Amino acid sequence: MTVQPIRLFGDPVLRTAAAEVVDFDKELHTLVKDLWDTMESEGGAGLAAPQLGVGLRVFTYHCDSAEGHLVNPTWTALDEEVQDGEEGCLSIPGMYYDCKRHRSVVARGWNMHGEPVEIEGSDMLARCLQHETDHLDGVVFLDRLDAETRKAAMKAIREADWFDGGMPAIKQSPHSLFGGAV
Image 1 (tube, rainbow, N blue to C red):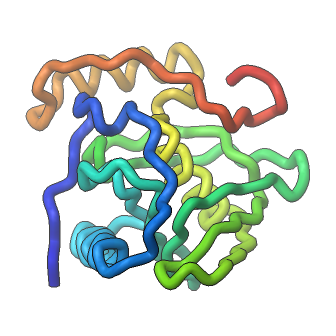
Image 2 (image 1 turned 90 degrees about the vertical axis):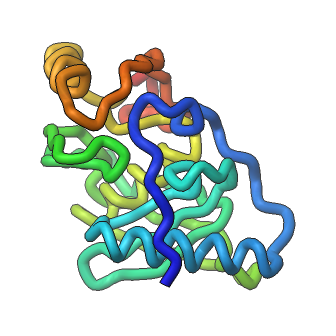
Image 3 (image 1 turned 180 degrees about the horizontal axis):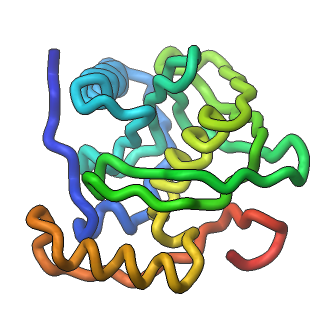
């Protein structure tokens, strides 16, 4: 088991868009294993490579009855239905806020062997797939909160024992919720 330290909010790697994976090699297999072991050890529903300080488009997930990993993922909403529910993040420990996400999505990418993967999910799995893909774009779920909730969340973060004081700007996701700016 190779559990790695998780990067916390304020670390610039969490605000940097990850690079596409081009080599499906032993290093990628090791990264997927490290992501999996760390996610399971921390009890997370998902974990993206930037959360381990690796700027590659890879994440693992273990949510509802679905588990696996995606390399170079994309997702598409299956309809316009939205869910509003509690969301948290291993990089923002102990904090949970209501966040709007598409209710049902299909995610496509590859596995660590370069074989195509497609996973369709609703509710919690859809939330997880969107959340982890956001990480690969340098977006954290706080960026999707309404202004009042985001302000309260930022105050709570500044007061958290784990926070070191580096406050990155809020980032705009390329994956809008309603077809326009977030």
